Amino acid sequence: MSKSSLAEKEQSGVAGPINIGDRAIDNLRYIRETMERSTRFTAVPGLGGVLMGVTAVAAAYIAHQQAYLRNWLIVWATEAILAVAIGLLSMWQKSKTTDQSIASAPARKFALGFLPPLLCGFIASLGLWDLGRYELMPAFWMLFYGSAVVAGGAFSVRAVPIMGWLFIAFGAAAFAVPAELGDVMMAASFGGLHIIFGTMIAKYYGG
Image 1: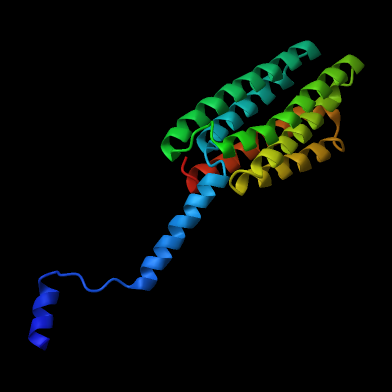
Image 2: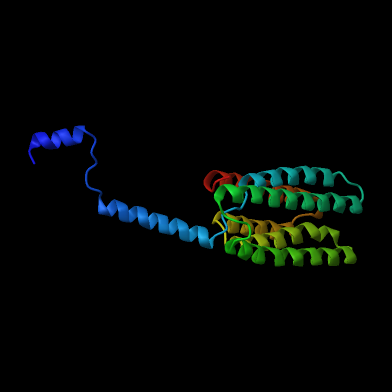
C-alpha cells in the first residue's frame, strides 16, 4: 500500500489493528473486578455511615446531659435503633446502584460475621446493667461493635475492617479514661470514625 493510500485511510477515520496486549489488559481488569464483586460485599453505605456518625454525635451530647442512668441508656438505645434503620436503608439504596443484591453470597457472609459480636454485645450489656456497672458499657459497646465490623469487613472493602480495628482501639482506651468521658469516647468513635470512614467509602467505593 502506498504512502498516499495510508494517509487517505488515516484521514478517513478507519481504525487500525487492535493491540492484543491492550485487549488482554482490559480482559484481566474485567475478570478481576468481576471476582471482587462476587467475593466482596461492596454495598456498605458511605453516606449512610456519615449520617450514622452525625446522629451518634448528637446522641452523645444529649446522653451526657441526662441526670438519670435510665434516661442515659434510653438515649443510646434510641440511637442504636436509629443507626440500624439508617444503615439498612442506605445499604438497600446503595445495593441498587452497585447492582449487588443484599441477599447475595458476600452479603450473607458479611451478615454472618457482623451479627454474632453484636448479639454478644447486647447480652453483655444486659449483664452489666444487672450488675450495676453502667460505666463499662461504652467500652464494651465499642469493643463488640469493632469486633463485628472487623468480622463482617473481612468480606467487604478494605476500609471497613480498618475502621473496626480503630473501634477496638477506642474501646480498649475507654477502660483507661475516667468514666465521665464515656460519652466523649462514644462521640469520637461512633461519631467521628463513622463520619471519616463513611466519607472515604462514599468517595472511593461508590457512595
